[in-house]
Length: 598
Ligand code: OXD
Ligand code: MN
Image 1 (cartoon, helix red, strand yellow):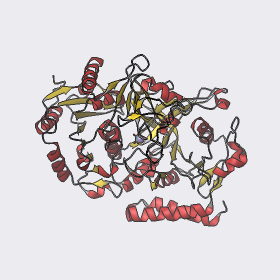
Image 2 (cartoon, rainbow, N blue to C red):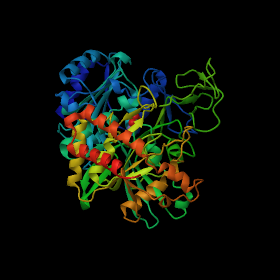
Image 3 (cartoon, rainbow, N blue to C red):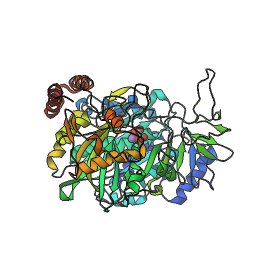
Image 4 (cartoon, helix red, strand yellow):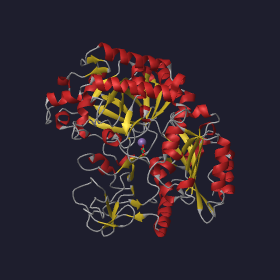
């Protein structure tokens, strides 16, 4: 039964029903009853396995196709009317051409299938931050994941009334043909069109496609920001909570930082960390001349491998019920799951992410270890399961931000932490972010690439305009957050990490918060303000101040080369379109490097 009389919604649905020709159409109201009935169907077809309901109540297991395990940046397009609005960092397709191409692929693709119509909200329904969407899909897996990651409800349609202001999401698995896989965003039409994939980031259209690509464009037009950032709150012993957002590229530890458990030296004093979000922040101006952030999602789509009792006990606890596991190891005898880095007891009789027989310690014909879980295997878990979820998670006004952190995965160059001199310099620091690629996207892993503000794959418009938008936001905000850069991933010459990371990152957050409160001094260096080594709390850590100095250095030679690389990146990618303020910041960096000793 149709859940709305909104003509724009009905026209949209009809257009794609006529094109895709499903046998059946089902409106999703988000009720437990309906989701359970759909789960039953998916279990009966083998699309989904039910996990052990005693050990993992409400949990499900799914495998994607072997050729469909990550976001496909090469097949992701921004289809703005003018190519210049997609900019130099996005793939572009003319929207007319794109619709024609995709409509041809989609013609009749749902014959013999059901089309599910999912009304969803990004952000709390009715909040000033909230934006609504309708996703059409032929995948029950998508329906069930969307019901965790977003607010799926008939209430969305009620709130929408007869408005046209919703994002149109069209998805079909078609035949999962890689050659005809397209993830197209049409920012000027509020439309997303995704074909031939069943992998999360490509098909849960509320997430990357809407909450980042479309929303970043909306934010540009409407004066707010959509960022690839976690949001956390640090509660100090006096009860005051400082909120921090942090942008890191995919699979660089956002979920771990967002759910951090502080080391004992902090917990015994009463410090606590609360999670507001682990991947996306929508940021608006608010009371007191500050920036406020909400997490528009309702769940976590986290990377499973490496998640364990030590690295992220909160994430692990979050996955113990009502969670969907994708592409991890499945153990048929116990109907439970496993992944590399979960514990030291890999199963003896299991199925790997491809469904093949697998056991711990398995090697291939060349003696190389065979992984059981895909490196980009995931858990989709409800936010409300998270033991450290912030009480402000549902606050419709968001949380006030004291600090913004940028960070990448860099074996060399970037020090453990430094602070930008001011907002403009901070925008420069974000714009020069570079990081080693990870398994979250298809393609080579471990290659350093420029990834400004961790938004390279997610900015829905021209990145030069995006930089300008950042600069402009700074001009409008009186009490701006301070901006920092961190790098947890420095290594020695043998490739060993020099910083323990995980919970111990609290020691760096502590310094950041003290800087925000003007409670600690810093050393001015050519790249920004750095901590005095003695101001990073090392209590309880097997690390000397001398060791710390090694990751708080900024080698002049390395940074001169870095500056050359930035210049080259700026000039070849953006040329004259890059805001002049950023060229000026680069010139300042070069001058500082020439002038000052490090
Ligand atoms: C994600 C990603 O899934 O960034 O969050 O790829
Ligand atoms: Mn992400």
